[in-house]
Amino acid sequence: MSRASRARQIVTAAAYGGGSLGLLTAVGWALLFGQAKLARRWVGPPATRPPVGDGVWGSGPGPEITLAVLGDSSAAGLGVHDLLETPGVLLAAGLSEVAGQPVRLVTAAVVGARSEHLESQVEQVSDRHPDVVLIMIGANDVTSRTRPAEAVAHLARTVRRVRAVGGEVVVGTCPDLGTVEPIAQPLRLVARIWSRQMAAAQTIAVVEAGGRTVSLGDVLGPEFAARPDELFSADRFHPSAEGYAAAAAVMLPSVCAALGLWPEEGDALVDRRLFAPDGVRPVATAAARAAGRPGTEVTGVRVDGRESGPWGRWAFLRRRRPRPVAGPTEVPHVH
Image 1 (tube, rainbow, N blue to C red):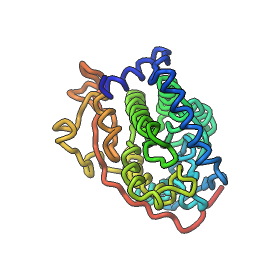
Image 2 (cartoon, rainbow, N blue to C red):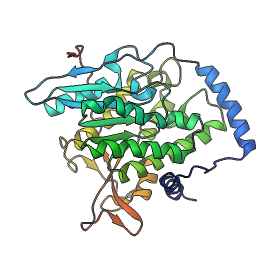
Image 3 (cartoon, helix red, strand yellow):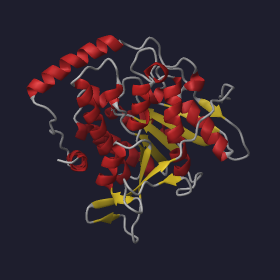
Image 4 (cartoon, rainbow, N blue to C red):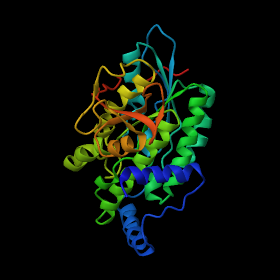
């Protein structure tokens, strides 16, 4: 079964309340579960909580833009000690620079969160009426053996809720867990497969719910493998400041584009060898390709005035040029 077919199967199961899609035999699970326990002991619990940078970043003549950040430890910035190095602050500062407006950052991301926690997180920020919501989720769903269909269903409901009240949504999909050093083979290989499958299923669900995704797995994966001392933090599991900066650089253009602050096509790098000649694919095919391509954004698109074709929702793939984010030098103005 192709990755696209598998991802579509997961999303279909989520839509109809399924969730019995198995990935391994009981014997395989026993082996991998034992390896996972060893890896968790190696990594250990986080030594500190991530710093919180909520408040207003940047300035300008326009009204505040509200950016909400939901998700797990990667969204919260676990692994760094300076709030100026967290992905939320980096994105808020970068967004303010592009927009020429102040950006209010509201963080509801929690260390250890799974997709099932997103709905309570969005409840926490709903009274702030965020203009754009950034979600980074999926790793803990994989490591906790959450059924993919269940995880994707929770994510889709969260996206639909934000879109229903006019907010934009950008999802950084499941990272590549095959780069985590404490994970031994064969678990490392399986973790990579699961991560990419989860990312593909997330992409289908998010695009069909009205959001857009950015593939993080292969943005960080090769760099983590080549430069682990720089891009992993001390726990060998979470990104370092350089790792978060790399993630923020590929997500910022998509966040800006979602708000109409970035040209949709002006910086799009459509690889015609890997994608369709015009960058348009059925969403399942687009999702499968994005899961294994660095920094690929997937968003819904109309073809001849129609959102869907014979193989489902149309989607556009693009690789935006990363925009390095210079961290702010001052703490936010909180009010």
